[in-house]
Image (cartoon, rainbow, N blue to C red; front, side):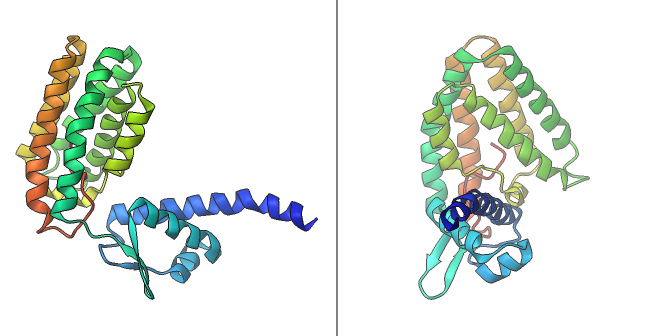
Length: 239
């Protein structure tokens, strides 16, 4: 009987671990946990009303994924990113994402293209509101993440998609959208539109080159701002 109970409990623990993992990651993304903040096991367990076991497991996973770092005799704290980290991420993205868009332009279906066009249109409308309603940057970030994810998935290359997801680490750390003024944002939106135009025109080379330009523009701004920002992980700007 004890063995049965143990086996039955395993999925419950796993589900709780996944929920804690997502909650902590979202707090990092939202800026509630700042770089070098320690994540206390007991505090998280109390706040999320779970036992300490799933919290402990979630913290281990987040350390292995690079969101947290384990400090001996102190615990796990939020990783602070440097200009070098940002540069390395962009170096990888500049190779992988243009490749993904090239493949996507050859394999795109009409349903996904429609979703991409709707995302681009929504982002464009929100960008025009950023100066009067700065809060819309959060929604732009989420839509931007969806836009890039749809493009990568359209490549129909699961390994490439998985590697990019790991490299970018979801790319939705919304507080760093403050690095982009209205001119930068509009340029980013134009790039999105031109990528879609290239796909519709059946030109993989055009789509690939625009994505590379898109990332280079983002890299120039992001790497400059990394050392004067709060150390948030790279890959967070609207690109």
